[in-house]
Image (tube, rainbow, N blue to C red; front, side, top):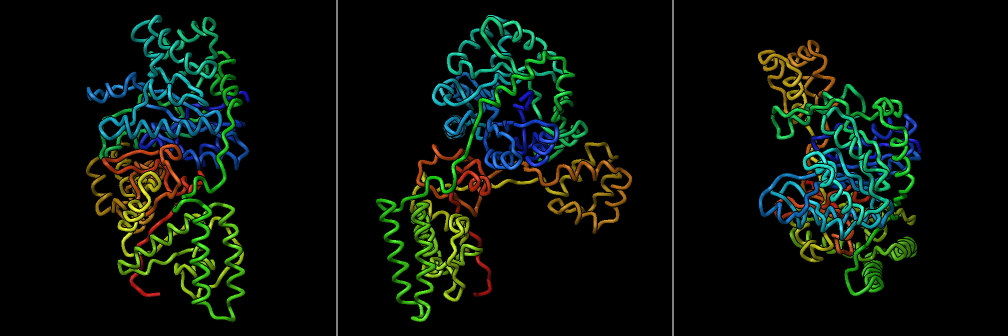
Length: 537
């Protein structure tokens, strides 16, 4: 591979990227780039989706993270010091990815600064460095910044510490984004490379797909706190560049090719579902035996004699596959959650395709009259949804019953709303205040752009007079602004969670960095709860 982007921010760099996985990978593939890295800020929220999308395109996925790095996290937290460096970590293999999961979890859970940022320090790097490639980060990485602020000798000492951990998997990173500090660090890296046997690598810190998208990026960066601020992204050069555009930056060609060498080192393959299914009782075998007894008892007592053979055939097929995939504990947990909801006065029935099997009917999770399906479809049996009177109560029961080390809320993203996108864009591109107020009068913040336009003539007139309002509001509508703990969905695992999924915290609430979709793409079992409808079945 001649060149690939190793420093790339997608939507998981909340309020700091307008690069979707689909658009980013489509553009990279069209440019002939056969691999790409995802290095979102501080977490791995979209890494499974990125991994799957790369594989679909025949590209090599390079899941990684741009960490917030400090020398000693506990010291920084004790002093309330918000200073941090940047550091890029990319998984070479699945063991490396699992270490990255544990590193980001520990950063968020143990080294969380003011509830908004998980810090990585030397202690965490020493614990979890195996299977990881480390790049020094932009000029604000600890190694280049030591050179810039304290001189070459100080930078060398920092470099030696990285080399002691990562050896040949440490790459000093160079870029040219218009910052004068980069010229200092780039020159020093080139000077140090032959002395330390380093292979410098050129990156572009990608945040958006095309040059003109700098304005969309500027809009979301300026409004990350829900109002327009004077924050400014100085550089306008961080688009997804082609090889020729990277060559035009003036670096030695071999430093561009280093990125391809890094990509060739990496082969991360996620395991097939289900990953770490729960065991409810003493063993998977006991769980299966109990599940089978419950289903067979219900078969004998509730199914009409003429239907017994047909239903039992479907049940046996399902149980065989459940045994093969270790899903008995999951189904017992689902049954217990449903029974808890029924005791609270709800119906607690499965919804969606998961309700169609014989097992669901016999456990009382679907109407007895529902058609049974003998054919086992794995996705119907590992990601179930229960309709219940109180989703929060059901999640609380499940967590209390099986423990916080096995059950965890997933993330849900909070998108930029259409009405807000119009308001932010109109102000930032300079629409006069009086005209803005007239055109946006009555605009519904949570409403979609299309809905607001269809119902407001004044808004249509505003967009006709200022076409960039509609153009750039459309680019940012729906982009995740932030993430929070879901009130409807959990992952169900055999634990321990820290070793399996990347976690984060919001106050006292711990939840996965993955949303439900990414949890499933990573192979984990999910269970969702929806509030039951008022009408009876």
